[in-house]
Image (cartoon, rainbow, N blue to C red; front, side, top):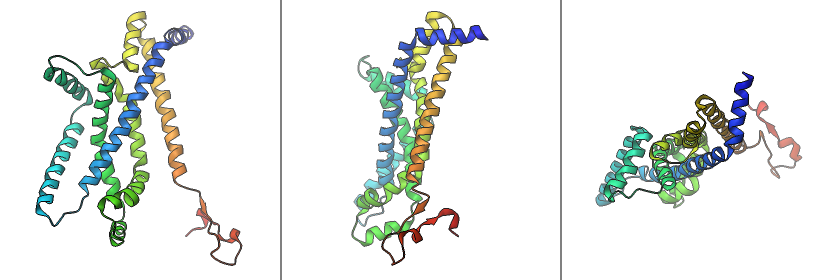
Length: 257
């Protein structure tokens, strides 16, 4: 056991440059893909909740757009990202006389559109969870649908779906490993390369396993802390609502009915 641990430590020290490079690309692809995927989800969420118009032409266009979004969501949620990677990467080469996409941008693109399909449903659920009275109240003061979404609904929906967004980010950190099938130099790619250099296959993959765990565990704790900060304080203070001192207006959660 001691010799095994020594071998693991020696591999980590000897090939730390490769591991660090793999971690950097993994986090770059996962973070960028999650952010772009969230933007895709927000755009599709806003579009899919547009109310019907009195103009039949606009309604027809909206139906077509919603149908396209629906097909996109179903296709990318219903197929493995590894298969999507091969189809997109080699499909581009097929249509461009063998010229392939740059690997890192290709990885970011694949993760982004895959994440966007999941985010589309997550955002739609977050929007639906907002009370309809807030829509009606916004419309009553003259806001249109996009203003209502931007200033009223989306901020609340983001807060509600933050745990799901965090989960997608953690999943993307792990799922970048499938991009090695097209040669993207992320953490799993470098792990496979190192194992072929030293033939210590088990020890090398143990190092990679520990690194993945540390990344996901750390990110999960950071995101949970952000969620707690967004929950607000446990007590609320009302000022200048009465002649009573400010301390008398502090209401703790434990004292609420």
